[in-house]
Length: 191
Ligand code: RP5
Figure 1 (cartoon, rainbow, N blue to C red):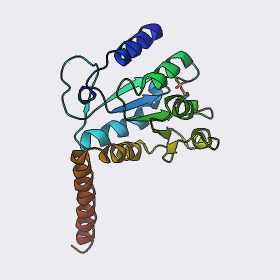
Figure 2 (figure 1 turned 60 degrees about the horizontal axis):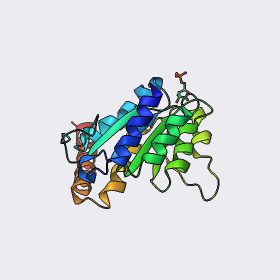
Figure 3 (figure 1 turned 90 degrees about the vertical axis):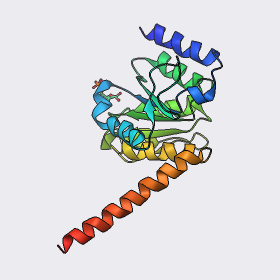
Figure 4 (figure 1 turned 180 degrees about the vertical axis):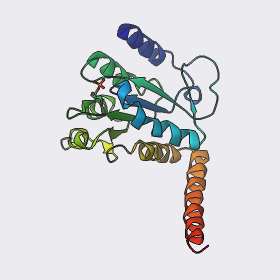
């Protein structure tokens, strides 16, 4: 139940776990119908060598990990509050939050609740952009364009790279691969 999930988040926050064993990136989305868009964030993090972490028990599969939950601002506001309020104590360094519709409130509300943990908002559709980015002065959110959850994950990794050289190296490698890809495509044009 939602209450069980809230209890779990609060227990993890109280556990004072070693930050090296907790998820670094939290991915949340308003509905499982957002998954086809949000899956690109998982893919980007996987590409960078992160692993998905489903619980705090035992050693994670990789040094850097992400978790994901469906958290609805409107259907489960208590869970949204619990997720945002426990973010720091649960060891999250950055949150990616996606929501769709015209009232895509999960990213912006989570940004306010989890502050100062940075939140990268993903408007799931074009019509969700204003709702996600429309924050008052003093209440920041970082956001990508509609549907660009892959870039949200790259941005999350950039945040982590300020602290972790390993992630910075992976990001530079990724960029180099992209450059090589462009060069290859150019070469193919003249074949
Ligand atoms: C938003 O409402 C969700 O983020 C989703 O994009 C949209 C529709 O949700 P469902 O009705 O498909 O669950 O809050």
